[in-house]
Length: 247
Image (cartoon, rainbow, N blue to C red; front, side):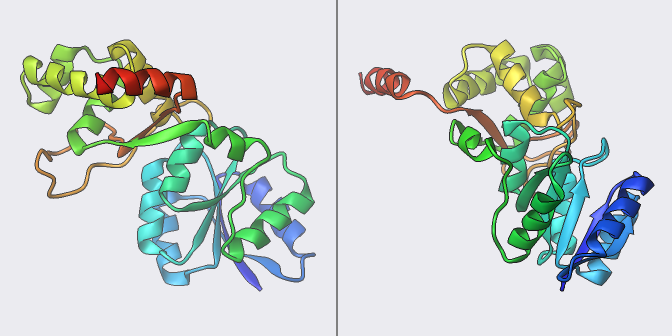
């Protein structure tokens, strides 16, 4: 029996899912929670097989990280209305095993839960091919902070003040980020940052803080990305860049 835990702040949805799963011989809705604070504490005690996580405004990539910390064996399925490539990639990077749309058929919902419970991966049609068109670039703690601040609309001087750096140091970081991510300017960098920080509904979300003990670590004044998902360059672009870098 697959013991499923549901997080959603919509009681009617929880009641409907409980009724639906009552007819399945191998899946049951053991618990439902509508409060994120209680979710983490309850998961730690119960340790269910699977968490169906409704992506409400309060759910972020950091939420996924904290859930994984308190229930490492629990497999996570995101339940979304819409999903971006950036959110999908960030979620999978942090241990999510399934992404299911709320308009999925009953058959697909049950298939998803069964596949993920058996240690498989479930992605909606069209999402897997889309993920092949992007690449994840790892960021340092400070780079993640800076991208997040730019995505929030800060200028270089404002970001420097927030991070306790000189404006010149921020410009050095930006030059490195432009090259690392293959973007032309700070506007393009901010757009990519915004896409990576936005949840499925397009709201700006809080990401993960950097790893403790990093050389440039400091208390995070803003959301912070551990990586950036950017479009993968085409083969022709790669060839041009390769010739340029080799020159």
